[in-house]
Image 1 (tube, helix red, strand yellow):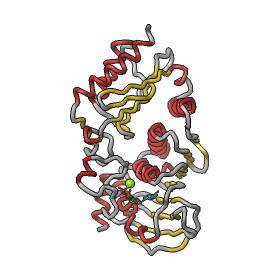
Image 2 (cartoon, helix red, strand yellow):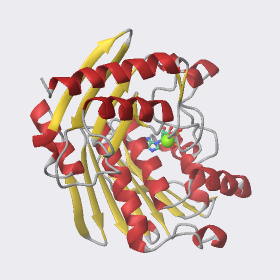
Image 3 (cartoon, helix red, strand yellow):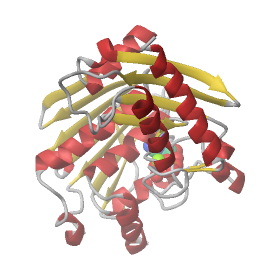
Image 4 (cartoon, protein in one colour):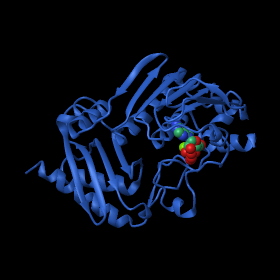
Length: 326
Ligand code: ADP
Ligand code: MG
């Protein structure tokens, strides 16, 4: 099983940012209002994710780190309609097979906290621990037992940049969650929860850069069972914004050709030719209309009705952008 988990880990866990993604998504699934991420040496030395979510009962700790035992996907039908962010219950098993891993947790209604440690896939017994309600997972010495993987890791600051990017993209989609990130003991990012639209925009600005709000145009439109909301950036003289494009489908960050094309067309048609628009957009639609199960990294989707989606996006953005010229 260790070997199988390590192979699975190769699929899911490419680098420290992949670990952070799995852990933070679990925290979000667990209803966390506050998530702290502490990183040392780009995540190779340490990744620690602490949350105030619902925790894990003592007798489920061993299951949580066991392969395929704990998926939130209970049936084929669930697979069709994945709405929670979890993926097939193998993330913790994978991570704990390629690192020195510990999970400490306390459920809010319990007095006691418990810890389980896994060292390169070898699970130790559950022991009592100290912990406030919620969960802390520590991942040390990532890939220490998989030298081939370790070799592919990049410079500390590159790996950290991937982590920061990942947290930014999660923070945009989860505006109600307090997210803090530190690197080598220094606070790097502090994203306060947004409870109204003003605060939400401030949070977007914090992630995308300070001059976004002044330039941002609010988009909100619903039709044919779909809803598009968010902000699109208007042109500024100064910036190159190639990588500040965030598009979410049912809460999940997605890179998709149909989407990219529709957005590009709308901008090109109305406003700025040859520029990279900045945008943060959320598309909500019936989960049955979109296949998110393409890749474990969850960054690709396949729409059942591509044409419909394309036209909805294009028209909505076109109309919104056109108003700025009126
Ligand atoms: P999945 O998320 O697909 O179920 P994971 O391996 O990521 O698989 O997590 C295994 C299980 O461990 C989850 O289903 C959940 O029950 C539990 N779990 C993991 N992280 C947390 C957390 N931060 N808070 C509460 N429960 C958690
Ligand atoms: Mg998970």
